[in-house]
Picture 1 (cartoon, rainbow, N blue to C red):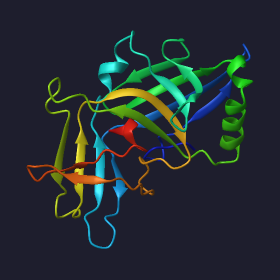
Picture 2 (cartoon, helix red, strand yellow):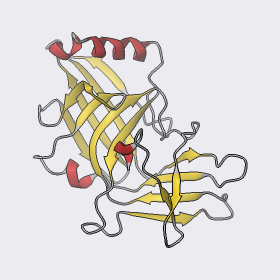
Picture 3 (cartoon, rainbow, N blue to C red):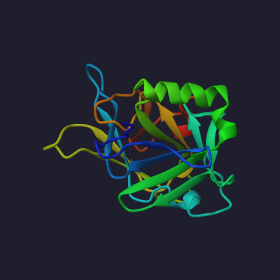
Picture 4 (cartoon, one colour):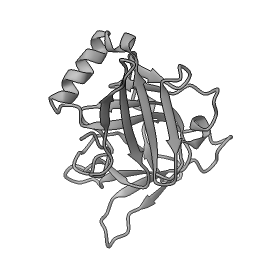
Length: 204
């Protein structure tokens, strides 16, 4: 099962009569991803993508969104503009159906994907996005302390983000059993925010 958070958030793969293969999946909103366990002395860092945070680019037909392998635009499987990636944005999740055409199936990266999926090595769906500038969306993200009854983590809430792609990955950040390291920095006001990491700039 391909999942970002929950056991029912998975990927369905099936063949179609026209020779294409169809992929269906979902990225659930409102779940906490553990980005860092805090190490020996720091606080854990968590992230929550709030309902319909991706709506801006999802709802606009002119905005392109790709379905990729491993966040690589050199390994595309489908796209919104090509009519092979259909997105549906609801309060509980962003769902998608991808049509993997016969031509795409013949590429080496698509063959690698299907082989990895069959072997159980593809483990999650990961969004590639950017936070809009403060001048356009002042409250696109907020940071808060976790409820002491639940833990001591610092939680980044994402309310609005510019979604550029969804990727199939072997180690998703949005999986409650996985931990992904990310650098954080302190602003002049004392707020903890993710620092720009050139390896993760697609997520900032």
